[in-house]
Each structure stands twice: as structure tokens, then as C-alpha cells.
Amino acid sequence: METISWPDFEKVEMRVGTILEVNDFPKARNPSYQLVIDFGPETGIRKSSAQITHLYRKEDLVGKQIVAVVNFPPKQIANFMSECLVLGAVGDNKGIVLLQPDMKVVNGQRIA
Image (cartoon, rainbow, N blue to C red):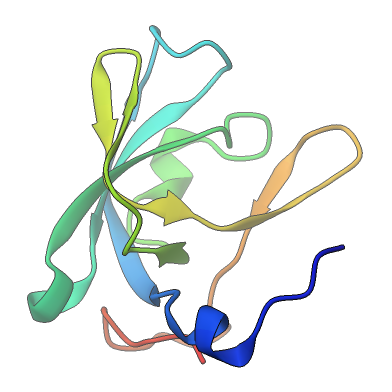
């Protein structure tokens, strides 16, 4: 594991957002959803591709709060532009468990 400095960590903008919309992503190389996430007035609405189809159904994701990195540059994935990185714990079977607050918080709150 590589060590980073505190100033490097402070550059990472992790924010809480609420999933507004979930769509299938058939053109993705690995099974994925396209997510539309509200990060509040400062950051706004962002889109992300997430490989979370093994553990989550689309209808269960709408309204769920998640944690994402919002200051990466956009990344093209197939025909989709991903604007943030949704964070999760990766299990042995590649199932990803989303990171989320255990209480409802205001969209856009920063993770420290």
C-alpha cells in the first residue's frame, strides 16, 4: 500500500448524494447501472456508472444516499460520460456494497 500525504487526501472531494434515477447500461463491458445523483446546490446533479448489479436492484437504489468522489474529471465509459465515482466496499466475489451514511444528511455534505 502506498502512503499519501495529508494535503493529497484533502484534495479528494467526497460528498453525499441521493440517487434520483437508475438505468440499465447494456453497452458497459461489465454489468452496470447508469446513476443520476443529486449532490445538492453547490455540486449539482452528476451521472455515474456503477458495477453494483450483483447486490442491488434498480428500484431499491432510487432515493438511497451514497458517497462519491465528485472532483475527478469526467470519464467516458462506452457511450456514457461518468461524472463522479460512487464508492463501495469490494467483496471477494466482486460484489460491491455501497458506502452510505447511516442517517439521512443534506445532499452535498462533505466526507471528512
